[in-house]
Length: 285
Ligand SMILES: [Zn+2]
Image (cartoon, rainbow, N blue to C red; front, top):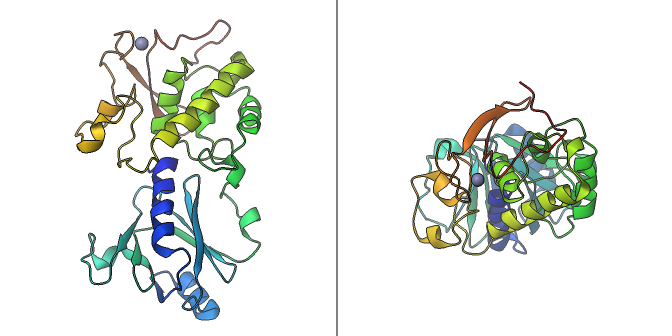
């Protein structure tokens, strides 16, 4: 599943292609969207801006409504010039939004909904801007308080709660714990505020490093920028721990461990030596 950095970069690219320009056409295979377009007449409106909120992508129209899409595992937005060959079959097309210069195509976008003016603030599941690690309005201190409110949960699970920290996905979860030396299975109750604040700061730093202008598709937390020129076959090659079970820790040489964690059974990677369990924090099972 794409994490917040991917959606952020998609929103930025769509914004550059669409924002400020009159909409020339809109099509969708989703009846709800075509009905909306029939009523609202998107052609003639402009796209005001495109933003990411965690794993949601929002396209704001000048009429006041917004198109919210979520990619889940399968979806993606592409931007083409008129006449350019699409990289996916037409059967995968779900949404097309075009202006005189560009055609934005949402392929296999599984979740799409129209938010009428005023609906965004109470739209279920779409995080507020202040919750989004990559948003300018992100409030790190408030995020630390939200994490600390989940005392009985393991820290790595809490980092995945989109209403706590929007944008962090499963890869960043393990990487954030590693770079801050936090054991992912440690209950929040056993962490002091400074450790939690360090984890929030790491989340901001690691995600921000993956939305630089020259960031590629692969998440990079380790090894600086060298992989940007190549397509690594091994997704763990640019990461500290994720995907590296049994391989030596990049800091201490101890083999990296892997375990399924949490109610959603997500995979977690960590170094037992660099990320020791603190006193007073027992591992379940
Ligand atoms: Zn280590």
